[in-house]
Length: 137
Image (cartoon, rainbow, N blue to C red; front, side, top):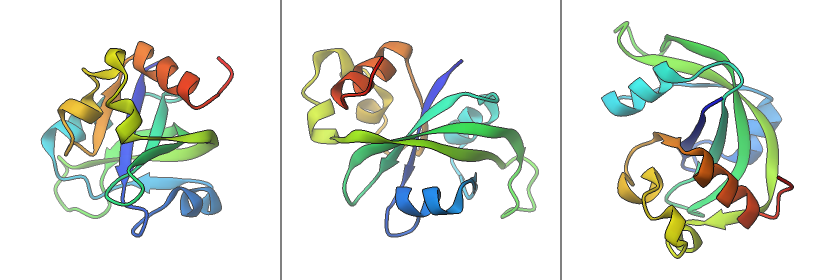
């Protein structure tokens, strides 16, 4: 299993809306690196759901429920989407300011590639964030 992080501005699509919808198509991605990450996602891979611009924190865990398919918001077959389902809200949201203070997270894509909307998360990063959030490992 691989781990990922997806970003959404809460005023556009929040964690609470995602939970209410029960699933969503992650579409509209127009960055090649982010697109490649969508392409590489497998069924059951888990993701952190991150509120960007407002809140600026990891708020929940989701999973891939349908692998890459052509993005329905584009006629170009090179742009991809995946379907995601919420798994759970974190016991405690983890703000970017805290992540930046953890030495073992300094190489996390969230810090190094701050504008990338779909990014990989290493297994060590995944479990460090879960521990910070007070989640059982």
